Image 1 (tube, rainbow, N blue to C red):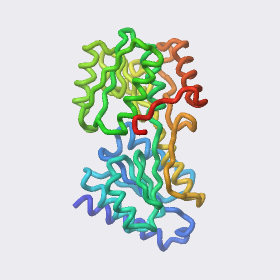
Image 2 (image 1 turned 120 degrees about the horizontal axis):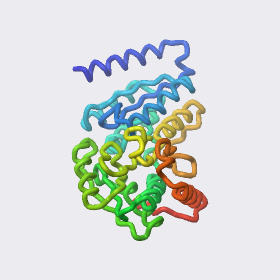
Image 3 (image 1 turned 30 degrees about the vertical axis):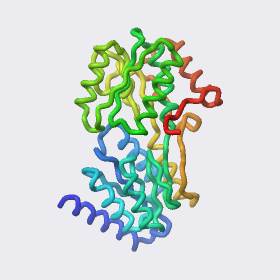
Image 4 (image 1 turned 90 degrees about the vertical axis):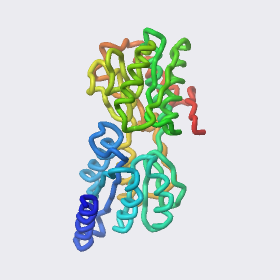
Length: 314
């Protein structure tokens, strides 16, 4: 009942815009979050930040919804399409299969999807070079490890997360050929307890730095992911691999405002600031300058093409 009521409120709100004097000039943007919604201190929160920045700086009207589970994804996509929004943005690869059908059924509605590709002309696919950003934090881990063992803890073992794993391992071994990379997957993005268990297990096996375990660090260093998570355990989270979902969301909305939205694939990598490291706010006194310099050197070489980080999806 609450879900139906919320959709009714959204419809009333947007129908109010139809009769408003600024309707024709004011793009209307809808955003559907990934499962888990707001408050994840990561992926969804970054998307929200981009949406709010577009609202405040570009003057667009925005609505958003937090699906309770995967089964609601298609329903929300169709509901927003029925409202005739100028752009419907869906967050996460979990939306992909539904959006293939929905975007085909609504050819006059513009859609955007973060983290996957839908090959329909009215869909803009916003993807990231996660392997490049992960390479940089891999360099950090490889050089900072005192045990020559580092760890990667992933959620679901899906192609997207393989890009994080692959880039991290490649960067660690680039910086330290003797390093061993332990890899485990929790089997879910919504099971922090299992992630904690795997991180602790890796630490017990000798890994002293673990990627994708910022919130569970306990007696070892961690590296955050997606958003700047350094504040979650200051001095313990060495850095975070920041993935600028906020930038991608803002950018695609700006295209609507500018009248330049064309669909297709947009990729965000190191070259354009789409991925990278956090600012080392709490760890500059912990990390030697030589390590920080090595990260910057790797970044420059990726940008110049001297280092080509392997993409396991290609």
